[in-house]
Image (cartoon, rainbow, N blue to C red; front, side):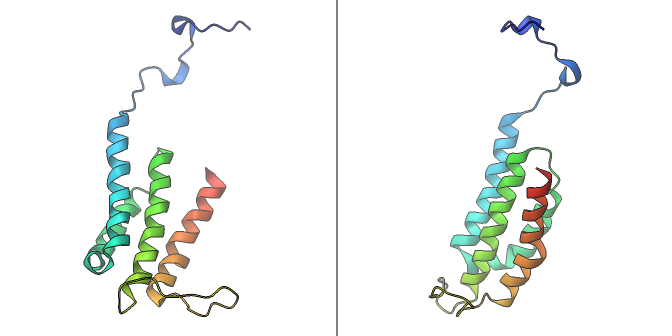
Length: 129
C-alpha cells in the first residue's frame, strides 16, 4: 500500500460529489445555541416560547452532523436551567447546599424536562455517537 499526499491520488469512493455547506451548519448551530442562551438569561420572557422551541429542536435531533446534536444537548441543559430560574420569585438560581438528599429540589417542570427529554437524549448520544 502506497501513501501519497497528492490530492489527485486520493480515492474518493462513496464520498465523491458530496458537498457539505459548513456555513449553513454554523448558522444552524448558532441558532440552536441562541435559543438556549435566550432561555437561560431571559427565563420569564422566553417561557411562552419554550414549548414551540422544544418542538423545533426535536425535529433536529436526528440531524446528520454531530455539532448540531451537541448544541442541542447544551440547549436542552439551558432550558432546564431556565425552568429552574423561572420557578423562583426573583428569577435567579436558588441557593443550595451540598449533600444528599437535595435540600432544594428542582421545580417539577424542570425535573420533568430533565427526566423525560434531556437525560434520555444524553444517554442515547453516549451510546450511539
